[in-house]
Length: 187
Image 1 (cartoon, rainbow, N blue to C red):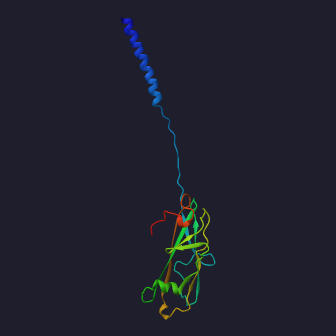
Image 2 (tube, rainbow, N blue to C red):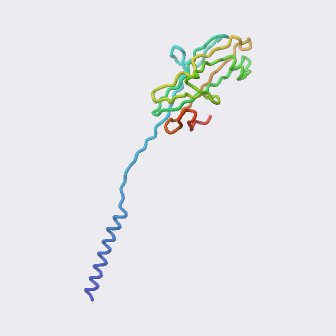
Image 3 (cartoon, helix red, strand yellow):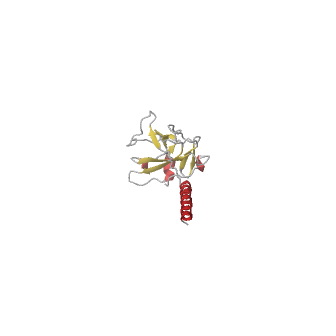
């Protein structure tokens, strides 16, 4: 009887050790580390004069009807990824007495020479037709501002501003053309 109990105890012990080996097999694990680094989209809006100098912060003074002012606007891709680019110029013009010039009159008396071959306009935004690779830049959106010869005396001592906003989004996995791209920042 003692032999049977001892034999039974040995069998139970053997089964227990076999179970531990199986348990260790089913709970084995391995650890790995995966690193994913996101890229970036970063642009610089450039405004220059014809001689390559930055456009004056205080603007140009004493502009006369019929005068053409150099103002070259383009965008540089200074990020790590290729980007779609859009730019929105906005005219803001006030007469000497502070009265705001209507958008129609601002367009009539102040003309920007947009490059419609490289850019396409939609909803006030100008979209660059080609992807802009890192370290490259767009073609100029415009290069001059022409003041109409038909401006009357009411425009004496007026102040005209051209504000320009630029935005960019990634090209990868984001549409086959700039107008198909999604993810533009809110206005």
